[in-house]
Length: 393
Image (tube, rainbow, N blue to C red; front, side, top):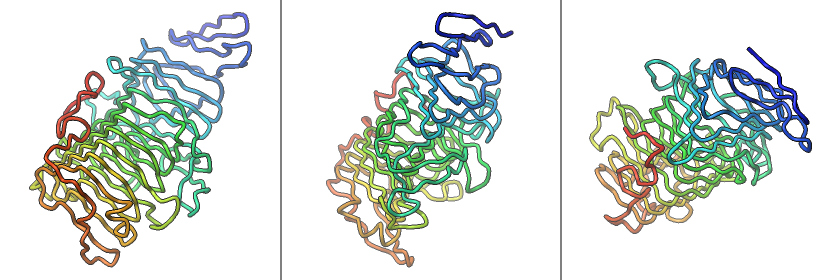
């Protein structure tokens, strides 16, 4: 039953026990005309701000899209349970903002609503910003996201899509086809004004985190048991990152990192060029069954990407570094390199292949090999900063 309460400066609507504001400020005008139904949580937030209630479980049954000019705020401890495969996801359009305010002891949880949860039960989180991408060389282009069908990209490097802290996403990655899938989090042209830290993607059916261009910086990310790559970037992403932990688990998965500049323009600008300090990548073992782990690579670096990595712990992969294509190889040892590296349980430290398919020496991709690199903080084991808000295998 819906009840309307009249107050000075606003009309407030109570839906299924949750207070949402249609006007909360005499200065700011209408807060939102979106009515929250926790049992059937979906729709378009077109304006104002919607604030969820941490004491309510929200059943996401379709697409929830935060449109240009609107804001969604999710307090610590909120749970969102999703069903509906590819139809169920949360997306933030260009100009929209999301604020996820979890804490180490009380994270926000987005998970499957099915009785027996499984990878791919729902889509995931999609954020679209106005920062540069390189689908057209030069960085001023825009494109449509492969999931959620939203515009992303532009010229605003410091674009702000909100703040995400202490969030755990589980059983994401619903797929339309073999080449069109959701990830745990898909960051499309997200700008450096966005805060993105302390986020875990757990046991999704595709990638954990994927960056499609943009300039967003990140810290303290955990990608555990996602069935394709734990981390993936493309389309000219540039960001500064610290404390990444990725582990293949549950008997599926390919790579710790898959990294491209751009699939259809290896030299397109801006060139993908992130920096990562404190990185742990843990594989299934160097002798894992090749019929299950078709590409058992720690870092697959190709299609013209650059990257600077420091304090890397890489364990349990057939090939720790797998570098492909002439444009990528040209950066090895300069704009594409790792320093302070520990290798454990590997067949090959490096493998290289030119665009023509011939082998290449890429051994200069790492330096300062040591037995003491700690990676994300604790080598192959989950670091202490994950305590309280993440799931282990």
